[in-house]
Amino acid sequence: MLATVKKQKVIKKYQKHDKDTGSAEVQAAVLTERIEELAGHLKKHRKDLHSRRGLVKLVAERRKHLKYLEKYNKTKYDETLKRLKLD
Image 1 (spheres, rainbow, N blue to C red):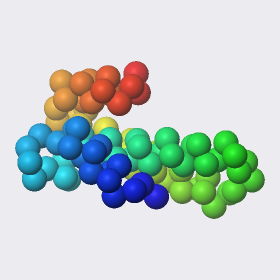
Image 2: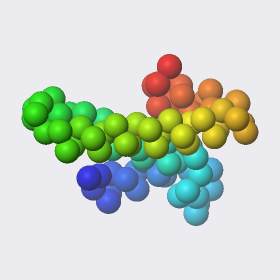
Image 3: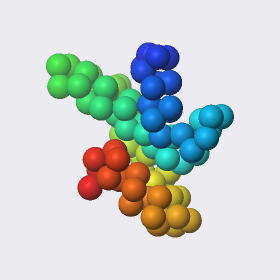
Image 4: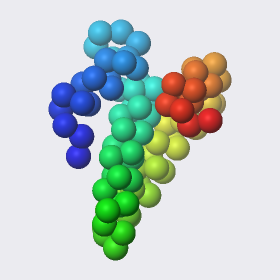
């Protein structure tokens, strides 16, 4: 689970305007942060299958947001991939 302060920092970094918390770019960034945090947990606790399932769900959700971006705004998609270092 992301700490509120950490989540707010990620949102501030990727938002388009002051009240933007739900755009695809922001959602993908928040999910990426959660995925990285959970991946670190799974490196320590290799047999934690419940967390592994959650990780797979988060990756699928991020993929959906990125697929939406790719379909409707290819330039934002490319920019977001570079900023999230997913290339």
